[in-house]
Image (cartoon, rainbow, N blue to C red; front, side):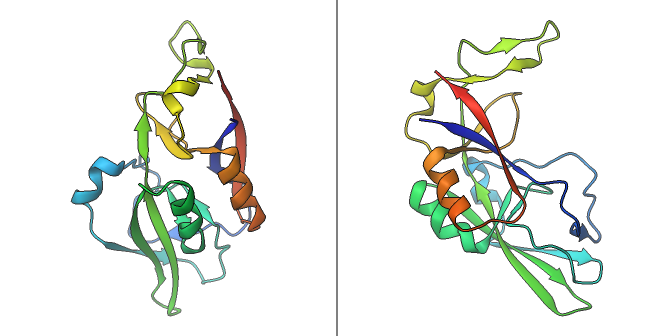
Length: 173
């Protein structure tokens, strides 16, 4: 099966700006094991005029999909945990609903992965056996922390004409 890193398109105009939140800090990654420590609903207040582009995938401050993709994600990966996130424009009385998606972290880096002398990954190769039948997951360890999706899930997302999602194929052996 083919797999892809899923990332937020940073070239789109109209970026969401957070208020009272250090978005320039390090990225926060939570997995399914963290689900009991998180609140059911998290409000995040937005700055700006309320005319931002509402992307369907956000990676900062946490990995979030727009609420319209929750059923699709759940159909392909029924063991996912979701935490509701509400992005709020207080001054404009606007709310955008997202789901913070808590995924499995897999030890799926294959033995054919190539590294630079400093230890950084030169060419990532996933271990098909370790990936198994997962359709959405993160890599465990110090590897790249973008979510990985299977081809069927990527196609299902693309059929819904997402805004702000990019895919980059990952080699699997």
